[in-house]
Length: 270
Image (cartoon, rainbow, N blue to C red; front, top):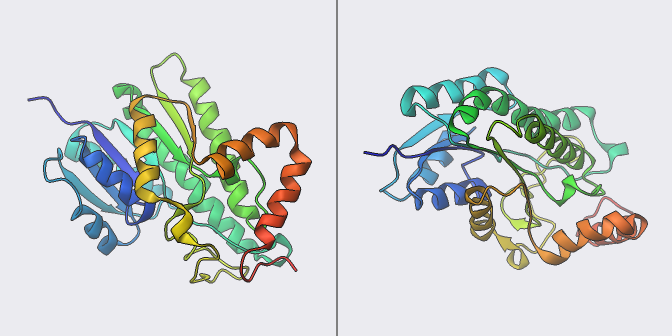
């Protein structure tokens, strides 16, 4: 019997992480669900295809190095291999930098950047052994400075630079590295985005109904993993076109980004 490949998904309790778990379960992968809230991980597990190679739930906080090391150790103990690590766990923020507590910025870097670094560090030997895939879910904010999201953009720029470097370092070892940047996607990240003092804003400043669904984003991301692409930018206008224009007309994109964000309800821009 051929052993199923194994995918680890952080932030698997909701949004794109949950949708990725569902998608990979249809591909007969063994699924390792990682997140801080065990109840939401069980909700995700209940949605998975029964024919998967196995399901494992690991409650963990990726901002803690010891938790990230334990994720990989428990996965190897149960399944004996790691084929895909998807660094999806993340939090956002919405406030002007001048108003933001430095604790908020540290927290975003701890979860978004250091969580990716810790998990990647302890998964890397196993991914090299399987010639597997190391994946980071960033954002268009990892390509352009998104006003009102200074810490979020900083963390996503950092993840992109980190993973691009890991790709080059291991270019002769068979490791696949994908940096995936969804556009604005309907998920709970805006509901849980932190305000200047670290409180959750509790509502989305955007019309979620007009955004790409988490399921659609997951479909494109999982296909990019299977095809071993190096990068993925989703949505045309707010994604691919914005990144393209930023290379040639950076000042224009600055103005458009400011005006776009300033139109949000309760925008921090006055």
